[in-house]
Length: 290
Image 1 (cartoon, rainbow, N blue to C red):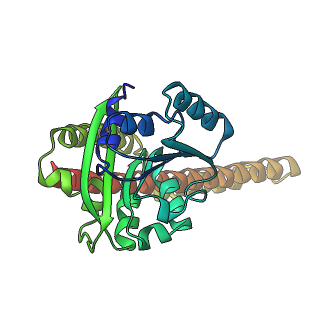
Image 2 (cartoon, rainbow, N blue to C red):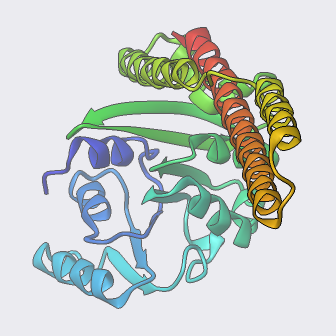
């Protein structure tokens, strides 16, 4: 069995000799590899869907490992007993989903099971839930494969907290060791946000309006004064009055339109400025780790 760089890193994070459960196993590649390498004695491959679990069972049979790898159908940790495993693998899921699955079975924390977690997103949530349940981040790995960066976290029982939000966002383990893959990831994130910032600043500059609300009011007053002078020289017949009324209504409508444009422009400017501050703050956090 040949694994991708991501899955091989996940598999190699397992402590040798452990009884392993691979949650969301899909093809059961990781359990098969671990057994074939002689790294673990037994494994459980579970999945929430029958299709992936059926594929896993076929691969297990093809390798002749039915007596070493059992399969379970069910969501997350539900089909597992914490007493039958030493290590739980959860790879290829969103960070929020991993957290929800762990919180649904907190006994795996209280029993001190080794957790090998590979969140596809929201890494900070995974780090936080480990700390919330008195786990420490024993080690992290980051790999780059097929245009994507993958983070693998090994959590073990132990007290640990991070004082800085930056450590939850980008990690402390890899940053302290100046991991080259993490540094490459941070540089790309910085450049990406820098590009967004430049675009926002251009939008802010191009959003300046030629006249303010006060200028619109002044313009209206000028028009009204002009209308008053014209009215004094016009015949006071019904047709003239009707014309003047329509003109005043038009001017009032023009003012309302300009005031609305001013309001929209102010809101737009505030949104852009708030986003600029947000992006600038994110860039500062990234720079702390670079």
